[in-house]
Length: 80
Image (tube, rainbow, N blue to C red; front, side, top):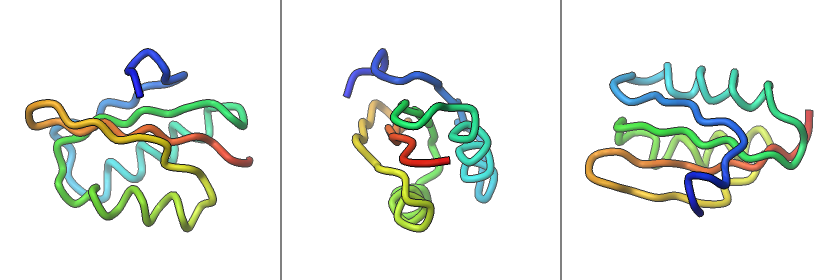
């Protein structure tokens, strides 16, 4: 996905768990159903945490992109 595909970007670089998940949850609540949240992080733990969070909450992980030390996750809001 392209960075411009996101409706909201949450920059969590420099944050350690559980803060990126907390910020991701706050961000997804701001969006309408079907919108895309991009979360940028350098926390390696999120490689497993983001897919697990999406599965638990019902949102859809639609893309992942890594550049240098930062990974961007694209999550489509599925429901309220």
